[in-house]
Length: 411
Image (cartoon, rainbow, N blue to C red; front, top):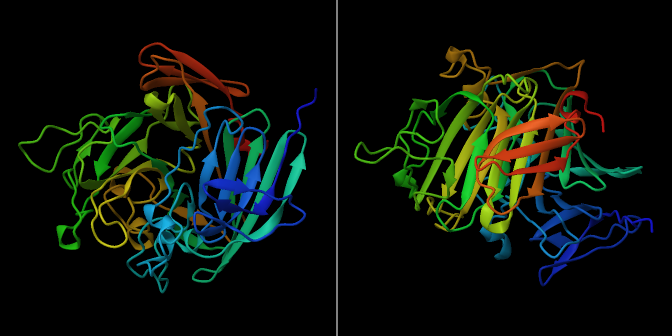
Protein backbone atom coordinates (compact mmCIF):
# COMPACT_ATOMS: atom_id res chain seq x y z
CA UNK A 1 0.00 0.00 0.00
CA UNK A 2 1.31 3.44 -0.83
CA UNK A 3 2.22 5.26 2.36
CA UNK A 4 0.06 8.31 3.00
CA UNK A 5 2.24 11.30 3.80
CA UNK A 6 0.72 14.15 5.73
CA UNK A 7 2.18 17.60 5.32
CA UNK A 8 1.08 20.61 7.26
CA UNK A 9 2.13 24.23 7.31
CA UNK A 10 0.04 25.68 10.12
CA UNK A 11 -0.04 27.70 13.22
CA UNK A 12 -0.53 24.86 15.69
CA UNK A 13 -1.99 24.74 19.16
CA UNK A 14 -0.43 22.58 21.84
CA UNK A 15 -2.77 21.46 24.56
CA UNK A 16 -1.67 19.12 27.33
CA UNK A 17 1.61 18.55 25.50
CA UNK A 18 0.05 17.34 22.23
CA UNK A 19 -0.13 19.08 18.84
CA UNK A 20 -3.50 19.97 17.36
CA UNK A 21 -2.87 20.11 13.61
CA UNK A 22 -5.09 21.44 10.87
CA UNK A 23 -4.59 21.32 7.09
CA UNK A 24 -2.54 23.99 5.32
CA UNK A 25 -5.51 25.51 3.52
CA UNK A 26 -6.99 26.74 6.84
CA UNK A 27 -3.80 27.93 8.62
CA UNK A 28 -5.37 28.74 12.01
CA UNK A 29 -3.48 30.76 14.60
CA UNK A 30 -2.10 28.89 17.58
CA UNK A 31 0.69 28.53 20.09
CA UNK A 32 3.53 26.03 20.64
CA UNK A 33 5.35 26.48 23.95
CA UNK A 34 3.87 29.97 24.20
CA UNK A 35 5.00 31.11 20.75
CA UNK A 36 2.96 31.43 17.52
CA UNK A 37 4.54 28.82 15.26
CA UNK A 38 4.30 27.14 11.90
CA UNK A 39 4.49 23.36 11.55
CA UNK A 40 6.10 21.38 8.73
CA UNK A 41 5.51 17.64 8.92
CA UNK A 42 5.70 14.29 7.14
CA UNK A 43 5.62 10.73 8.44
CA UNK A 44 9.18 10.89 9.84
CA UNK A 45 9.65 14.46 11.07
CA UNK A 46 7.59 17.27 12.57
CA UNK A 47 9.15 20.75 12.79
CA UNK A 48 7.77 23.76 14.66
CA UNK A 49 9.16 27.18 13.70
CA UNK A 50 8.39 30.27 15.76
CA UNK A 51 7.14 33.36 13.98
CA UNK A 52 9.28 35.45 16.32
CA UNK A 53 12.93 34.78 15.52
CA UNK A 54 12.37 31.71 13.33
CA UNK A 55 13.49 29.33 16.08
CA UNK A 56 13.17 25.66 15.10
CA UNK A 57 11.80 23.54 17.98
CA UNK A 58 10.33 21.28 19.01
CA UNK A 59 11.49 19.00 16.21
CA UNK A 60 10.28 15.43 16.49
CA UNK A 61 12.24 12.78 14.60
CA UNK A 62 10.98 9.21 14.22
CA UNK A 63 7.62 10.80 15.00
CA UNK A 64 5.41 7.80 14.14
CA UNK A 65 7.38 5.28 16.18
CA UNK A 66 7.10 4.11 19.77
CA UNK A 67 10.19 6.15 20.68
CA UNK A 68 10.12 9.56 18.99
CA UNK A 69 13.17 11.80 19.49
CA UNK A 70 13.09 15.51 20.38
CA UNK A 71 16.74 16.59 20.69
CA UNK A 72 16.42 20.38 20.93
CA UNK A 73 16.35 22.59 23.99
CA UNK A 74 13.35 24.76 24.82
CA UNK A 75 14.03 27.45 27.43
CA UNK A 76 12.31 26.70 30.75
CA UNK A 77 10.54 30.08 30.99
CA UNK A 78 8.34 29.21 27.99
CA UNK A 79 5.88 27.50 30.34
CA UNK A 80 5.65 30.53 32.62
CA UNK A 81 3.62 33.72 32.47
CA UNK A 82 5.36 36.02 29.94
CA UNK A 83 7.54 38.73 31.47
CA UNK A 84 9.91 41.30 29.97
CA UNK A 85 13.13 39.80 28.64
CA UNK A 86 16.54 41.53 28.52
CA UNK A 87 16.84 40.96 24.74
CA UNK A 88 14.42 39.78 22.00
CA UNK A 89 16.19 36.48 21.22
CA UNK A 90 15.43 35.22 24.74
CA UNK A 91 11.67 35.50 24.25
CA UNK A 92 11.30 32.36 22.08
CA UNK A 93 14.73 30.83 22.88
CA UNK A 94 14.77 27.24 21.62
CA UNK A 95 16.32 24.81 19.15
CA UNK A 96 18.11 26.11 16.09
CA UNK A 97 17.90 29.62 14.67
CA UNK A 98 19.84 31.68 12.14
CA UNK A 99 21.92 34.59 13.42
CA UNK A 100 22.80 37.68 11.36
CA UNK A 101 24.97 39.19 12.71
CA UNK A 102 25.93 36.32 15.01
CA UNK A 103 26.84 37.30 18.57
CA UNK A 104 25.96 39.74 21.32
CA UNK A 105 26.44 42.89 19.22
CA UNK A 106 26.95 45.02 22.33
CA UNK A 107 29.10 47.52 20.41
CA UNK A 108 27.96 49.76 17.59
CA UNK A 109 29.85 49.25 14.33
CA UNK A 110 29.95 51.95 11.64
CA UNK A 111 26.62 53.34 12.73
CA UNK A 112 24.92 49.95 13.09
CA UNK A 113 23.62 48.69 16.43
CA UNK A 114 22.13 45.22 16.06
CA UNK A 115 20.25 43.25 18.73
CA UNK A 116 21.94 40.10 20.07
CA UNK A 117 22.18 37.55 17.23
CA UNK A 118 20.50 40.03 14.89
CA UNK A 119 16.95 40.77 13.84
CA UNK A 120 16.79 37.32 12.23
CA UNK A 121 16.82 35.76 15.72
CA UNK A 122 14.39 38.06 17.52
CA UNK A 123 12.04 39.77 15.04
CA UNK A 124 8.97 38.51 13.19
CA UNK A 125 9.26 36.34 10.10
CA UNK A 126 6.48 36.02 7.54
CA UNK A 127 5.21 32.93 5.79
CA UNK A 128 5.88 32.76 2.04
CA UNK A 129 4.41 29.31 1.52
CA UNK A 130 5.00 25.60 1.29
CA UNK A 131 5.73 23.31 -1.62
CA UNK A 132 5.46 19.56 -2.05
CA UNK A 133 7.29 17.90 -4.94
CA UNK A 134 7.82 14.14 -4.99
CA UNK A 135 9.37 13.13 -1.68
CA UNK A 136 10.41 16.70 -0.79
CA UNK A 137 8.42 19.19 1.32
CA UNK A 138 9.65 22.75 1.91
CA UNK A 139 8.53 25.57 4.18
CA UNK A 140 9.60 29.06 3.05
CA UNK A 141 9.76 32.12 5.33
CA UNK A 142 11.29 35.59 4.96
CA UNK A 143 12.30 38.58 7.06
CA UNK A 144 13.08 42.14 5.93
CA UNK A 145 15.62 43.71 8.25
CA UNK A 146 15.88 47.36 9.26
CA UNK A 147 19.26 47.94 10.93
CA UNK A 148 21.06 46.87 7.77
CA UNK A 149 18.52 46.81 4.98
CA UNK A 150 17.99 43.50 3.23
CA UNK A 151 16.02 40.30 3.17
CA UNK A 152 16.74 36.84 4.54
CA UNK A 153 14.78 33.93 3.09
CA UNK A 154 14.60 30.72 5.12
CA UNK A 155 13.82 27.36 3.51
CA UNK A 156 13.39 24.28 5.70
CA UNK A 157 13.02 20.99 3.83
CA UNK A 158 12.28 17.42 4.82
CA UNK A 159 12.49 14.28 2.68
CA UNK A 160 10.20 11.28 3.01
CA UNK A 161 12.02 8.37 4.63
CA UNK A 162 14.68 10.56 6.27
CA UNK A 163 15.11 11.94 9.78
CA UNK A 164 16.95 14.99 8.50
CA UNK A 165 16.27 18.74 8.26
CA UNK A 166 17.81 20.67 5.36
CA UNK A 167 18.16 24.44 5.92
CA UNK A 168 18.88 27.12 3.36
CA UNK A 169 19.23 30.81 4.19
CA UNK A 170 19.54 33.24 1.28
CA UNK A 171 20.83 36.70 2.27
CA UNK A 172 19.93 39.38 -0.29
CA UNK A 173 20.36 43.13 -0.61
CA UNK A 174 22.99 43.45 2.11
CA UNK A 175 26.43 45.00 1.69
CA UNK A 176 29.48 44.76 3.93
CA UNK A 177 31.06 42.25 6.25
CA UNK A 178 29.21 40.40 8.99
CA UNK A 179 29.52 37.33 11.24
CA UNK A 180 26.77 34.79 10.75
CA UNK A 181 25.77 31.26 11.61
CA UNK A 182 23.39 28.69 13.05
CA UNK A 183 22.63 28.49 16.78
CA UNK A 184 21.67 24.81 17.22
CA UNK A 185 20.90 24.28 20.91
CA UNK A 186 20.43 20.78 22.28
CA UNK A 187 18.61 19.62 25.38
CA UNK A 188 20.87 17.98 27.93
CA UNK A 189 20.14 15.27 30.52
CA UNK A 190 21.18 15.88 34.11
CA UNK A 191 23.42 12.80 34.40
CA UNK A 192 27.02 13.94 34.15
CA UNK A 193 28.86 12.67 31.08
CA UNK A 194 25.72 11.18 29.52
CA UNK A 195 26.30 12.84 26.13
CA UNK A 196 29.43 12.25 24.04
CA UNK A 197 30.57 15.03 21.70
CA UNK A 198 32.74 14.54 18.60
CA UNK A 199 33.73 16.71 15.66
CA UNK A 200 35.63 16.44 12.43
CA UNK A 201 39.29 17.48 12.56
CA UNK A 202 40.09 20.85 14.12
CA UNK A 203 43.04 23.20 13.69
CA UNK A 204 42.73 24.42 17.26
CA UNK A 205 40.26 25.59 19.87
CA UNK A 206 40.13 28.62 22.13
CA UNK A 207 38.23 29.49 25.24
CA UNK A 208 36.38 32.82 25.13
CA UNK A 209 39.08 35.48 25.49
CA UNK A 210 37.29 37.57 28.09
CA UNK A 211 35.22 36.51 31.06
CA UNK A 212 32.11 34.85 29.60
CA UNK A 213 30.22 34.36 32.86
CA UNK A 214 30.55 37.30 35.24
CA UNK A 215 30.08 36.58 38.97
CA UNK A 216 28.88 40.19 39.33
CA UNK A 217 25.90 39.09 37.26
CA UNK A 218 25.55 35.87 39.27
CA UNK A 219 27.14 33.84 36.47
CA UNK A 220 30.03 31.42 36.85
CA UNK A 221 32.44 29.71 34.45
CA UNK A 222 34.88 26.85 34.84
CA UNK A 223 37.29 27.25 31.90
CA UNK A 224 40.40 29.42 31.65
CA UNK A 225 39.71 32.54 29.55
CA UNK A 226 41.87 32.92 26.44
CA UNK A 227 43.37 29.42 26.53
CA UNK A 228 44.43 27.86 23.18
CA UNK A 229 44.33 24.08 22.76
CA UNK A 230 44.13 21.35 20.13
CA UNK A 231 42.26 18.57 21.94
CA UNK A 232 38.60 18.91 22.93
CA UNK A 233 39.20 16.48 25.79
CA UNK A 234 42.00 18.61 27.31
CA UNK A 235 40.78 22.15 27.85
CA UNK A 236 42.47 24.17 30.65
CA UNK A 237 40.30 24.81 33.70
CA UNK A 238 40.06 28.21 35.36
CA UNK A 239 41.79 26.97 38.53
CA UNK A 240 45.38 25.73 38.47
CA UNK A 241 44.59 22.93 40.90
CA UNK A 242 41.77 21.55 38.69
CA UNK A 243 42.36 18.97 35.96
CA UNK A 244 41.77 19.82 32.32
CA UNK A 245 38.14 19.73 31.27
CA UNK A 246 36.94 17.00 28.89
CA UNK A 247 34.43 18.68 26.59
CA UNK A 248 33.66 15.38 24.85
CA UNK A 249 31.72 14.26 27.95
CA UNK A 250 28.80 16.49 28.88
CA UNK A 251 27.14 17.74 30.94
CA UNK A 252 29.91 18.43 33.44
CA UNK A 253 30.94 21.01 36.02
CA UNK A 254 27.47 21.70 37.42
CA UNK A 255 26.84 25.35 38.20
CA UNK A 256 28.93 26.81 35.36
CA UNK A 257 28.41 28.31 31.93
CA UNK A 258 31.29 28.36 29.42
CA UNK A 259 32.00 29.35 25.82
CA UNK A 260 34.67 27.94 23.51
CA UNK A 261 35.27 27.97 19.77
CA UNK A 262 36.88 25.35 17.56
CA UNK A 263 38.25 26.05 14.09
CA UNK A 264 37.70 23.38 11.45
CA UNK A 265 40.62 21.71 9.72
CA UNK A 266 40.54 20.42 6.17
CA UNK A 267 39.93 16.66 6.18
CA UNK A 268 41.97 14.24 4.14
CA UNK A 269 38.92 12.04 3.58
CA UNK A 270 36.05 14.55 3.30
CA UNK A 271 37.69 17.84 2.30
CA UNK A 272 34.41 19.59 1.52
CA UNK A 273 32.48 18.73 4.69
CA UNK A 274 32.75 19.29 8.42
CA UNK A 275 30.60 17.68 11.09
CA UNK A 276 29.61 17.62 14.75
CA UNK A 277 27.85 14.81 16.61
CA UNK A 278 26.26 14.39 20.04
CA UNK A 279 25.66 10.78 21.09
CA UNK A 280 22.86 10.16 23.59
CA UNK A 281 23.59 6.49 24.33
CA UNK A 282 21.05 6.25 27.17
CA UNK A 283 18.31 7.39 24.78
CA UNK A 284 19.60 5.34 21.84
CA UNK A 285 20.31 8.03 19.25
CA UNK A 286 22.84 10.53 18.00
CA UNK A 287 22.29 14.05 16.68
CA UNK A 288 24.48 15.36 13.89
CA UNK A 289 25.15 18.51 11.91
CA UNK A 290 26.90 18.79 8.55
CA UNK A 291 28.24 21.96 6.96
CA UNK A 292 30.50 23.43 4.30
CA UNK A 293 33.53 24.76 6.24
CA UNK A 294 34.22 27.24 3.44
CA UNK A 295 31.00 28.99 4.55
CA UNK A 296 30.86 28.18 8.29
CA UNK A 297 34.46 27.68 9.37
CA UNK A 298 34.07 27.25 13.13
CA UNK A 299 31.83 25.89 15.87
CA UNK A 300 31.05 27.79 19.06
CA UNK A 301 30.20 25.62 22.08
CA UNK A 302 27.81 27.27 24.54
CA UNK A 303 28.02 24.94 27.54
CA UNK A 304 25.24 25.95 29.92
CA UNK A 305 24.99 23.76 33.04
CA UNK A 306 22.92 25.72 35.56
CA UNK A 307 25.60 28.44 35.64
CA UNK A 308 23.50 31.60 35.30
CA UNK A 309 21.33 32.86 38.14
CA UNK A 310 20.04 36.20 36.88
CA UNK A 311 16.74 36.74 35.04
CA UNK A 312 15.48 34.73 33.19
CA UNK A 313 17.97 31.89 33.78
CA UNK A 314 17.53 31.51 37.55
CA UNK A 315 20.00 28.63 37.72
CA UNK A 316 17.77 26.18 35.85
CA UNK A 317 19.07 26.21 32.26
CA UNK A 318 20.87 23.05 31.10
CA UNK A 319 21.65 22.99 27.39
CA UNK A 320 24.43 22.74 24.83
CA UNK A 321 24.78 25.12 21.92
CA UNK A 322 26.71 23.60 19.01
CA UNK A 323 26.73 26.73 16.90
CA UNK A 324 28.24 26.50 13.41
CA UNK A 325 29.44 29.96 12.49
CA UNK A 326 31.93 32.26 10.86
CA UNK A 327 32.42 34.68 13.74
CA UNK A 328 34.64 35.74 16.62
CA UNK A 329 33.12 33.77 19.47
CA UNK A 330 29.76 35.38 20.39
CA UNK A 331 31.12 38.93 20.41
CA UNK A 332 29.15 40.23 17.44
CA UNK A 333 29.67 42.56 14.50
CA UNK A 334 32.33 44.96 15.82
CA UNK A 335 34.73 42.31 17.14
CA UNK A 336 34.21 39.95 14.20
CA UNK A 337 34.90 42.58 11.53
CA UNK A 338 37.99 43.96 13.31
CA UNK A 339 41.40 42.35 13.70
CA UNK A 340 41.15 39.82 16.50
CA UNK A 341 42.77 36.73 18.00
CA UNK A 342 41.33 34.46 15.30
CA UNK A 343 42.11 36.63 12.27
CA UNK A 344 45.71 36.77 13.52
CA UNK A 345 45.69 32.98 13.14
CA UNK A 346 44.42 33.30 9.55
CA UNK A 347 40.81 32.45 10.48
CA UNK A 348 38.08 34.54 8.86
CA UNK A 349 35.54 35.80 11.41
CA UNK A 350 33.14 37.52 9.01
CA UNK A 351 31.62 37.05 5.57
CA UNK A 352 31.53 39.68 2.80
CA UNK A 353 27.95 40.34 1.70
CA UNK A 354 27.49 41.80 -1.78
CA UNK A 355 24.30 43.60 -2.76
CA UNK A 356 24.22 42.24 -6.29
CA UNK A 357 24.78 38.61 -5.30
CA UNK A 358 22.86 36.59 -2.69
CA UNK A 359 24.90 34.81 -0.03
CA UNK A 360 23.52 31.33 0.62
CA UNK A 361 24.13 29.24 3.75
CA UNK A 362 23.18 25.55 3.47
CA UNK A 363 23.07 23.38 6.56
CA UNK A 364 22.04 19.84 7.53
CA UNK A 365 20.88 18.50 10.90
CA UNK A 366 19.44 15.14 11.77
CA UNK A 367 19.07 12.20 14.12
CA UNK A 368 19.87 8.52 13.70
CA UNK A 369 19.16 5.64 16.07
CA UNK A 370 22.22 3.78 17.34
CA UNK A 371 22.76 0.16 18.42
CA UNK A 372 23.71 -0.93 21.92
CA UNK A 373 27.39 -0.36 22.56
CA UNK A 374 27.65 2.63 20.24
CA UNK A 375 29.77 5.20 22.08
CA UNK A 376 31.35 8.44 20.94
CA UNK A 377 31.61 8.93 17.16
CA UNK A 378 35.10 8.35 15.78
CA UNK A 379 34.56 9.07 12.10
CA UNK A 380 32.05 9.49 9.30
CA UNK A 381 32.10 8.00 5.82
CA UNK A 382 30.09 9.44 2.95
CA UNK A 383 28.49 7.60 0.07
CA UNK A 384 26.02 8.97 -2.49
CA UNK A 385 22.85 9.74 -0.54
CA UNK A 386 24.04 8.36 2.80
CA UNK A 387 26.33 8.89 5.79
CA UNK A 388 27.80 6.13 7.98
CA UNK A 389 28.67 6.95 11.59
CA UNK A 390 31.45 4.83 13.11
CA UNK A 391 31.92 4.77 16.87
CA UNK A 392 35.05 4.38 18.96
CA UNK A 393 33.77 0.91 19.86
CA UNK A 394 33.59 -0.13 16.19
CA UNK A 395 29.79 -0.01 15.96
CA UNK A 396 28.33 1.50 12.78
CA UNK A 397 25.05 2.98 11.68
CA UNK A 398 24.08 4.40 8.28
CA UNK A 399 21.48 7.10 7.63
CA UNK A 400 20.04 8.36 4.34
CA UNK A 401 21.31 11.95 3.96
CA UNK A 402 21.59 14.03 0.79
CA UNK A 403 24.83 15.68 1.85
CA UNK A 404 25.51 17.01 -1.66
CA UNK A 405 22.96 19.68 -0.72
CA UNK A 406 25.66 21.49 1.26
CA UNK A 407 27.48 22.44 -1.94
CA UNK A 408 24.71 22.43 -4.52
CA UNK A 409 21.78 23.74 -2.48
CA UNK A 410 19.59 21.28 -4.40
CA UNK A 411 17.55 18.35 -3.15
